[in-house]
Length: 117
Image (tube, rainbow, N blue to C red; front, top):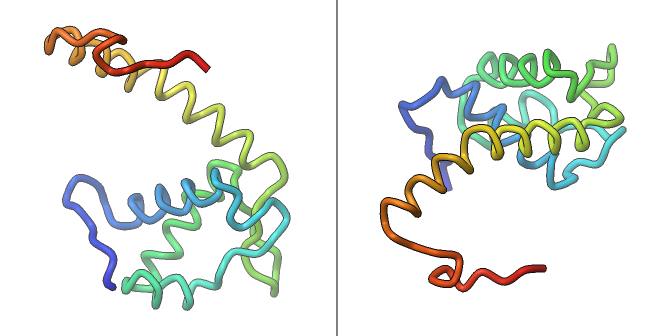
């Protein structure tokens, strides 16, 4: 199955976002190697240069590192860093927008069958 891409962001950014979600889910674990550029390009049916750009974006954010002659590896603390970033984005951007939409629709926590855990 060919992955789908949108026109909302450059493909390299969409790939970086997908890989970040995988890192957040612990795949691959910290200290482990990522698939090679060629493998990722084949898997996502995109140009290897696009993959390289996506990996560079993750590296620039301190999530992965290049080990000369070995490939790209998940840095220690990458998952925790991503988790902090995702939480901050949710609380700063996503949650206020979601609350506003719920209010516009007249929905309450009870309507959503919200359970405290």
